[in-house]
Amino acid sequence: MASNVADATVALRSPGHSDVRELLDFELRNRQFFEANINARLPSYYSAAGVAQAIETALADAAHDRGYQFLVKDDAGDLVGRANLSGVKRAHYHSAVLGYRIAESAGGKGYASEAVRQVVALAFSQLGLLRIEADARAENAASVRVLERNGFVQYGRSKRSFELGGVWYDRLHFERHADA
Image 1 (tube, rainbow, N blue to C red):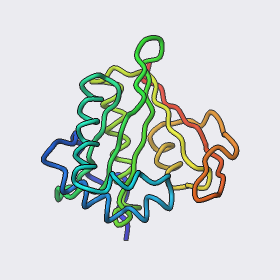
Image 2: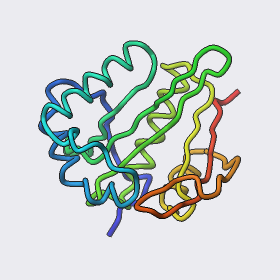
Image 3: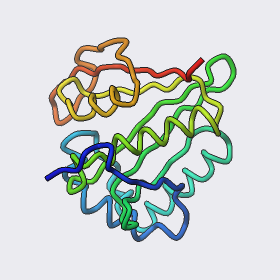
């Protein structure tokens, strides 16, 4: 039975060089599940060198205020997901785009909702952002619920705007503003 969303406990932390093996294992274990829902990563990503390069890029992005990646760990310390803020815009916008992915085996347990809650709190406090955008495929009810639970409001829909496996999907666009 899935835990109540309010009961989910996660810890976020930035990836580091010591996370290569664990992150590679996570991505390989969930590759088929993720690729059924989002576009595939390049095949070169699925190696220790590929993941190490991705971590290096994430560290550089954070150092230059371009984006922030987080590993999502459950209360046992197991990697259950990833969350990120990408496309950080400062002058005139103070915004970023939210993304997240949760392991297939960890779905429905509230980890995504809690990770998003923590990322949003961090974005609006420590990172000084004022607006976060996110989108979800229209038929992805679970992701839409995660966003709505975290105060995101839908502001648009783009039709046939995402292609996966030769099929075109609509995307729903959401935003959340820092409390005034």
